[in-house]
Length: 117
Length: 112
Image (cartoon, rainbow over all chains, first blue to last red; front, side, top):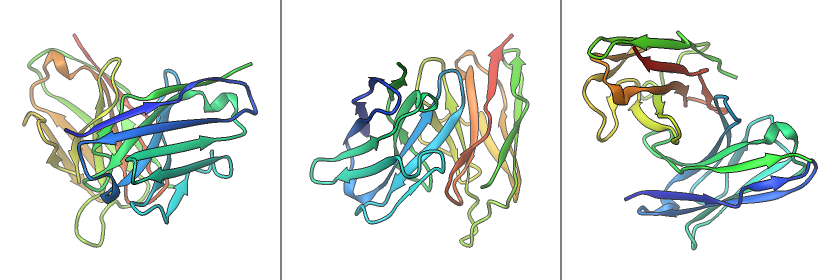
């Protein structure tokens, strides 16, 4: 059974940093593109970033480019999102997604990141 | 960026009745391999979104056959043939033909 479990969310001050993680199980992690999508409270979905199976290609939404870094450890079946220079508008639930069937076939339950002083 | 627009933004349906959601994109979602990169997700209350329909019209594993996707090019539709209580939530269409992958605003389905 595919399982994606995010962790590392919490409260951080504006300008601060946070790293969220996603532990994957139930599939061959190194075979799949992986993504982060976020959802601000009461709002819709926004794609944030993705990474190729071998980690050599990454892309970002303009809203986070230069501040966020996606990475992965295929030996530990773990996906990461390093978030720097955080702003209030980055407050959201961050979902880890598997890139299957040409899009996002499995989602984690999400981890809440709150940026506030 | 490709903009994806859903209508209506909310829907109230009597159980057993059909429902339909429209999704339009600003660029064609037809890929060179003949597949259409349009996907539908349902976010049930308090849950993460889940995949319903992939590549325009293919139902994901476990999705009831009362859900169907159709359309072409830039105009797409999700239909529920007979709405059930468990179908409540917010439905999103999304394009996955080019990054940044973009979602529609969401359509909230409620039961009358």
